[in-house]
Length: 268
Image (cartoon, rainbow, N blue to C red; front, side, top):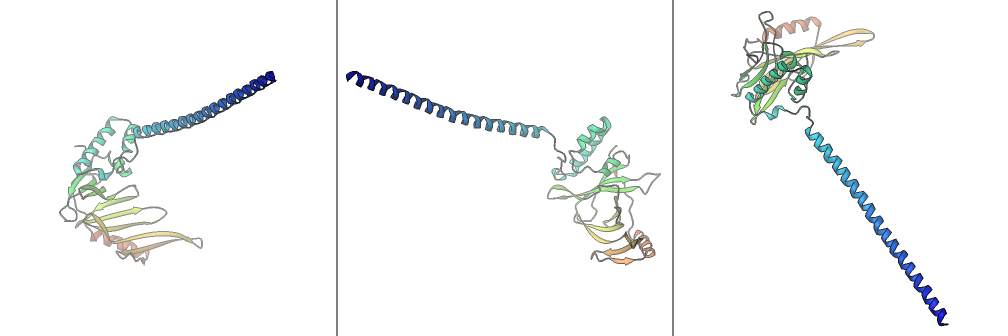
């Protein structure tokens, strides 16, 4: 009886130990499992964070295009100096290097690229509208061979201590010319339409439409038709005949005289 009791007690103790051992191992496995999962999550988070940091670091050292905005300039002198430096880069580097540099400036336009090779490309500070604030003109003054090749690519003013564009010519299909009394002539040619010319008055660094003419065309009943219009600041179109359009174009040319002015060449 005693032996049976001892045996029973021994068996009970063994079961208890085994059970306790299994419980301990299970708890250990659970604790280990939780720890491993947490470690995996933490590792993933660290990996993601490291990846994001690396991407952030990479993006921070990769130059962004259009980095230098006009509003970054506090004076015309700063912009003029950058353009002069720009000309040096163009003269001393290959095309790819030049355009890599050019992409950092949102004010750099196709028209400017064309004119950088022009010896008459220059600048002029002048009060166009008589408000006491000089505007900055960038463009060409023509040459002896082509005296009428005088265009203004860009015009800037100063607002709140910052350089601010009045207009910028972005395409060879548009051009600006300076007329007397603060008037700016704008020629445009955007096929398939429209084509025309408009006259604006520069006032306090803004352009207010005075009048203009344009024409456009359409196919109607298999017939090619031109439509000609005149309009003023009300923007109400008045249809013209082709003859009236040509006469109006000549009249406007005579009405707004283009002054002779001398830009300061950047290449001097």
